Amino acid sequence: MTVFNYKKPKKQVAIVVPLGTRPELTAEEKISLQQLQRHLGSYDKYMVAPKSLEFHYPDFEIKRFAHRFFGSVQAHLKMILSAEFYKAFEDYEYILIYHLDALVFSDQLEYWCNQ
Image 1: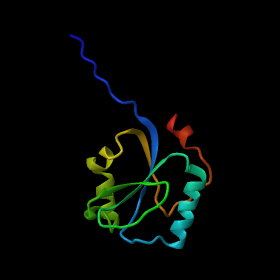
Image 2 (image 1 turned 90 degrees about the vertical axis):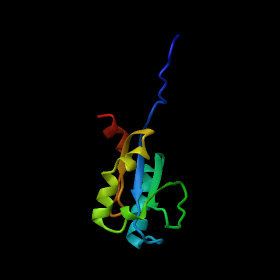
Image 3 (image 1 turned 90 degrees about the horizontal axis):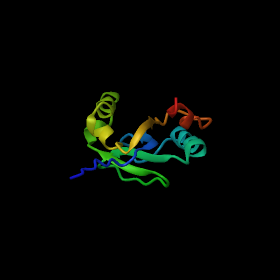
Image 4 (image 1 turned 135 degrees about the vertical axis):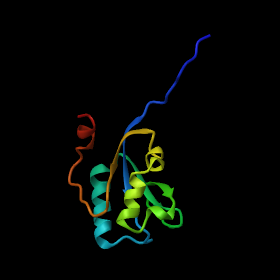
């Protein structure tokens, strides 16, 4: 008897954008999101949000987590240090956590993933 242990190959990288508890983005956050779309728009992109937050952003899938992971730096750190968070992205070899206080000016993501 032959047993095959088939594992689906992982995709290389996803971009993960954690949101806060506000339904609207600030003007600066919208600029950051525009830069993300302009330079890294071809990658799989996810918004990470509390289960209770209602919103929709085109070209992003949504991963929802318990409200306890949002609203403060400490709560955010608990989320990104939890196994639950990384299990949500287990189809990827890497994730880039893109906070909306950042700006991206070029696409070097694949280069760095290959290093």
